[in-house]
Length: 632
Image (cartoon, rainbow, N blue to C red; front, side):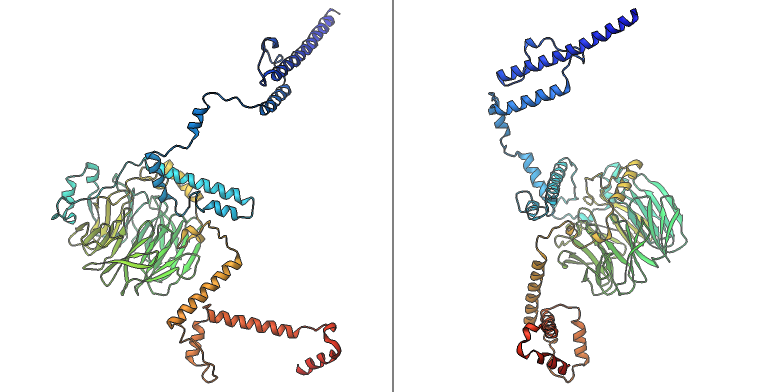
């Protein structure tokens, strides 16, 4: 009985304590309401009692939410009291005049816009207004803000690039930079840069083809008689070296230094960094030139068969196969700007190809003889070609016109353009480098070097370094060309000092960002564009432009030989058949008018064949059927 009385006493005490706590909470809530009515703000008064010490004494969650909601409503109803510091706040919030740093950032951001208009112009904001879908408008606005932020970030990061490119300058008017030898230049260089000048003699297996990785750290060389080697040329560490016992015509790195492709006598092969054979590409028959598209993971090749092959190295399937029809080819270069493949042919024509189109994107007649070498700058604006006629021409790819022309004593066998716009040509035993040769016609070369008793076969600039490497019949050589490489590099694009972990992460990111072959066009900015015109408006404008072009061509006399006379005799002559065949796939104004006339005749014949209702026949309706039956 005593134990039962003690337990009941504890339960009674607990219940009383709980009711007391609820009473305290309600009392404090009422005090808070009274304080809100007095001054408009929830303040604690002395009558509320001491602060709660335990969770039981604290106010409930529903009471706190009710208090905050009620106080916020009363705060909205009363005017806000301004302090004396509001004037300072307004002054700070006012738009400040841009200082020198901001002006410099805005000036640097113009080159990163790439056709994107700022917010004030009729850019993405104007397009977003014309979009009918309410779901698409915020997406376009978000994309516009994201691009503007990326432009400003790129301009700000450029201010942290402290390295600057320097060139070799002559002291007097009589001095010439091309007369400075590598031995004289080495006396003014530091130890690390002086070590980049070397000649590697390999007399047995030459001439050599060579290639550098995108970060300029690793070198791949291939001798014509079957010698292959990879190395970290900066540190002098040899990666792999072996002999394939077969003719090697060209070598090419893939996405990084872990894989490389070799154009051998019969097929193209892919090897890993240790020299083990990974794949035998039997579709690439007798290849002579290789090219790799790093953003699409496509290996392009051409050879003695004259075909252009595209193969996806990640999936192993053939993406495209084209036959230009100009015979065997040995000149192939990839445009780094739009990933379009340029091919030089034996008739002096340069064709531009995309893997998903059966016809070339463009054709240029560059030389009177076969094309020997080709090079394209990284902006995709200029192209340099050399022919068997001994000329070296610089072309503007934007309008397909020749800008400048140079001449060499012997046809240049290899060309290359550095990141800073220097043009290098290897002809005979000479290597000649021109400065500013793409923009203007220069009279004298920038630097040159001759290696006696050799024949230069391949020249390549090292990315992000002032070094030019070239292969010849006696091995490979490396010389220093001041101002050739880009002094500042982006570690997210190409890092010359990357570790193994960074290389693996970059490889995974490249695979995730892999582009489709359909994105390869002459103008890569067409992706993501919006055409606000309707379909009828586009067709009407296209028809008007075709009519204007036809009238202009007819005034110039281009269509006089295609006019067919209205006579029966000789309508099937060879000239008439050739004219009809030539105009079969051409949609001009004459053909449009003829199609419109045929459609009008079809509509009239259908109107005659339709069944006439009884209400339209009238009193002589019975003669309609008789007339049609007799006519049939």
